[in-house]
Image (cartoon, rainbow, N blue to C red; front, top):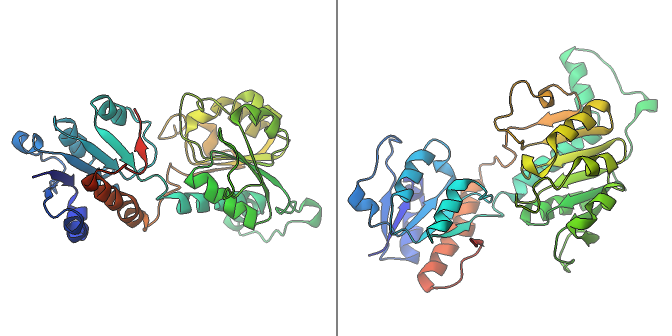
Length: 326
């Protein structure tokens, strides 16, 4: 009888759905106490595992202790999209199939990006500072921000997140270019698609640079100091990819000097962001603690939209959606 490791939350809320897909599947439930370990004889029987969002971060250690000790594990599905953490590489090296819920958090992350853009495009930071001082300080007409409609956005990465950002930006009247290796498809919500090698040229005509790509050897350091310097004075950077995609030192210098108008940053080279980082105190920077995806619907989207359909595919011997290739 095949076995599946799940959290107590998934067992309580999705047992009937799992049994409907695979009646013969035995559920092994992660202990409620994160310090408790599953017995070795049970680990030896594990075939599949679901790393659901409720497991992270409190139960991550016990979950990975169990799965790494499961010598016969065949498949691991994870709630998150990014699998650049070395722990996932170790599963692939063992021959464990790995699939993700990439796309399940696209809407809340894209909304965070657009929210950050609107805070920077409109005088919200200025108004908030006035509010803290209880000062009635309307923005003078001479200092009014430019209209957002007609400005140019470049989105690096046109996966689920980047595409949703582009769709919302188009609705606000921006001109949007996507950066991706493959050419433009009919349903891409952008006016143009360019390859990564053209990023430096694109930067010169970009008002809003959005980073929504995975961290790979190709994207590590993609937004170099040269690319940042090529951005027009007053341009903005919005990063929900990974901190290592951009030269963080060059970004800080460009923000401090006034070359860049501001930034919304959810990811950083070092996380948690060190207390002495200038990014905490720069007045034109909005920081979120790698938390742009936070939303109550994430667990439902990841489980019902990705894990359960993949469980059905696994039972039928079909190709998994969002499978990571080693």
